[in-house]
Image 1 (cartoon, rainbow, N blue to C red):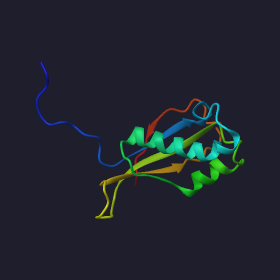
Image 2 (cartoon, rainbow, N blue to C red; image 1 turned 120 degrees about the vertical axis):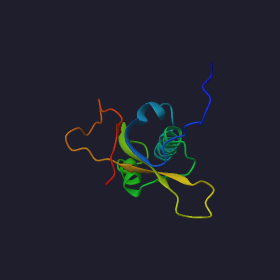
Image 3 (spheres, rainbow, N blue to C red; image 1 turned 180 degrees about the vertical axis):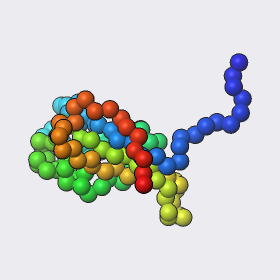
Image 4 (tube, one colour; image 1 turned 60 degrees about the vertical axis):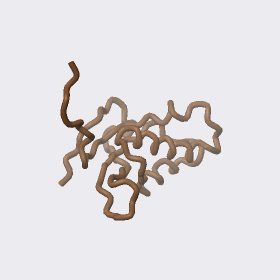
Length: 121
């Protein structure tokens, strides 16, 4: 029997840390298109995980991806995805996703880290 009642949607506002493996997403990509493609892959990952079409990438993450040039992008990147309410009343969607870079001191390769929920204060 199917359950009847209200459908439960995604939580309104939530923040999570993810590790994105850019290496496997950019395999067989032309050198001069790697960094722009990496940013597109980060956006598509955020859209898939958070369920919002409006994705905004922080400038620190942009600089981190471009830090080694257009063709030598980092293998993995640790990001914080924050689904937030859109304050703009004329916006098409009421939620947007902000993607920020998480700096790691003792584990710069981001290997072996799992997805974590972050409590915002």
